Image 1 (cartoon, rainbow, N blue to C red):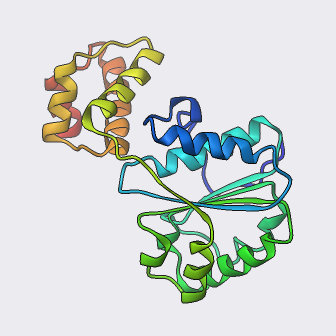
Image 2 (cartoon, rainbow, N blue to C red):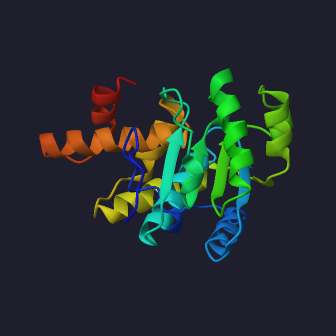
Length: 224
């Protein structure tokens, strides 16, 4: 598989097949169809925190890798080296997460990448918290992003979030009482990423202590 070196590893749990939300499946279908199109395309997705933007983009990267395509995924919520966007149009897919975190130099790089990409077959997918016109970015870049195919991710309610966590527990052959989730949602966080990280910590601690995940364990490990 042709993969550009990434500054960090992808999360193997973030696959399209476990991406929830009925409306969100329309986005998956659209992106899947792009794999069969030879021309360049730009897609911008937005949504509130924990709506699944990173999951969608990393899932896209995994899908490209499974098809032995050239792909790069970059999350600008993390520190990135200068010039990292240069030459990325040579890939089949470029997934850029959290464009709202780009500094001015990176914004210019993205603007240039967008212009170069139109002369290639690369698929460029980007994410942000709001519509392109509402971002605090260079005016010309906002104009370019506004021309993309734009999707708003469906917000997940607490029931869906619990179902997502439960499915991951099922994949590990683990059972957790629903009251555990209720406690986490009430006293720890309602953010899905935070909750999944917490479950990973609790799972590891329960294995070390050879006990099941309980509320006393939550208090001990997460200090809530």
